[in-house]
Image (cartoon, rainbow, N blue to C red):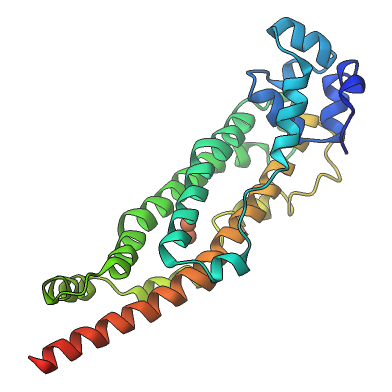
Length: 253
Ligand SMILES: [Fe+2]
Ligand SMILES: [Fe+2]
């Protein structure tokens, strides 16, 4: 639910974020840590920072303007566009979303030690982050670039011969199967946080973290679905076509 700008000004940071956790991110993007300003109104925080509350409200509204492409659009898009879209997702996760969540968790105060997942969450998130970055690097460096090469293959026998050896080095079928079967990297965190349930949590900072993690888990699910249902099946079909073509060329020669 949105607050009207005029109402926003006199509302306390604590109340705004209790009502809509995404305001925490809007404030963060202007260098304001919400958990240090619970009792100030938006007007007071903005004065302190020399900002207009309209900027914060505008940022919050913009967060809902999604540029996401749905599965149907991607299904009928060229393969290189699907790859560019996935890369764009990767960069958003790594440069925007995850550093924000990581900082939220790192700055969680020790008074939350009473929750039994506290230490585990602080310990496990940086490890998850590292694994996730590795997953993305592997995809971009080896898998996407291989698929792009298949896609761009020029119609000359020299390129086909080169591709023939590249194809021997990678098993796309195996990679696709593994990607489909592997658990989401978020599975551990989902279990630890009891499916991000905020039912028994009263600390607002922790509530924001759980809601951000839940939203990220959902985004990651959509992302993996695009890879499993669109990218890999189409890349496998392309690989087969290229392989048939190479066989035909060698047969004709
Ligand atoms: Fe990915
Ligand atoms: Fe992936």
